[in-house]
Amino acid sequence: MIEYKSATFYRSAFALCLAAVAVFANLHLLQPLLPELSRHYSLSPLQVSWSYTIGTLCLGLSLLVYASLSDAWGRKNLLLLTLAGMTLSTFMLTQVESFASLLFWRAIQGCFLGGLPAMAIAWMGEEYSKPALVTAVGYYISANSLGGISGRLLAGSLADVGHWQWVFWPMTLLGVLSCYCIWRFLPQATQFQPKPFRWRQALQDQLFHLRQPLLFLTYLIGGLNFLVFLNQYTYISFVLAMEPFHLSSSFIGLLFITYLTGTLGSALSARIAARLSAPGGMALGIGVMVSGSLLTLWPQLSAIVAGFFISAFGFFLCHALASSWVNQHASRAKASASALYLVFYYLGASVGGLYLQPFWQWGNWPGVVAGSVLMYAATLALCFSLWRIKRQQC
Image (cartoon, one colour):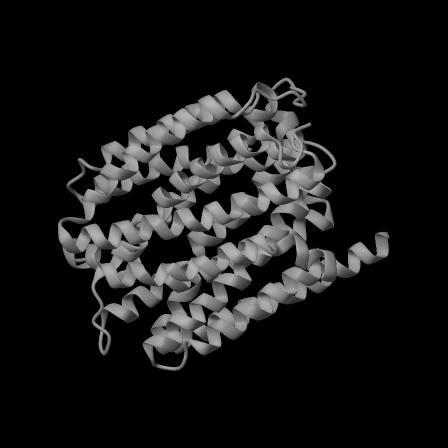
């Protein structure tokens, strides 16, 4: 087992975190560009949002395939293959001209982006000791948020000084670097026990996970929280591009600096879980998201930014705890269990725009906040059910 604070721990954690930055920067970089793309292609907000959500949708659908394959073939080589595919499809996005081509290559990219989320935490769970696992998962989730921030900031900045497509060039270089670091610094697994790949067995594993209340409720919590949280950023981008703010793409991209408090929330997740229990920590995170969402109703830019800072802390606190909880409570096929959590997570992100669209049409941004609070109330109730079931089993 790889022990916490060992040289191998730091090298492998660095490689996985750099790959996470590359993956999540590519996944999220189009979000601040949606108002620009809407003008460029003469599309409605809901139509143009598919250029972003098709990536999360294809990522989510690909996860179970990668998880099952990695349970049979191992993690590292398959991870390298998916990162190489991500890098190639990112390069192809520099060449697109039509919106249809953009959607096609975003879908291909999304399929390859699913490799790292499907395998990273499962690899950690097998190779790290428990203290190293808790710390590494916190680092990894923090890298997710840093990747989301950096991709969005870079995209917004390059759109203002040149063209929105320019962002895919540095992303291609980052993909090449992440491939090298995974190849060089991630050791071959020593604890991995391969299983013959059988579709029937993979399906049985997934159905087994879905029948476990401690896992299924956590899947719902992660998916429904992300459904709201991620798509709030989509709709607020259009709010900030219109009166009275009239912000450019680069300034809209700066809003995603609010993810930095998410990095802090992820890093503090283990300490909070030790005091409150994991379900209690998740409930705390959801309560923080509610308060942040309500603050954005104050029609001042400073209040909106502060509200998103608060919401990001709560979301990534809850997400880090849920990810660790799934890995700790999966009694078999851990990669499939973690991947199934992420399937719910990214499918939630993909349909969140459709869920919030009626609220947007009904009441603009206050309507979006109302729909958000309604969904957060549901996930808070799920956290209470999770705590109650765990208490009954103890």
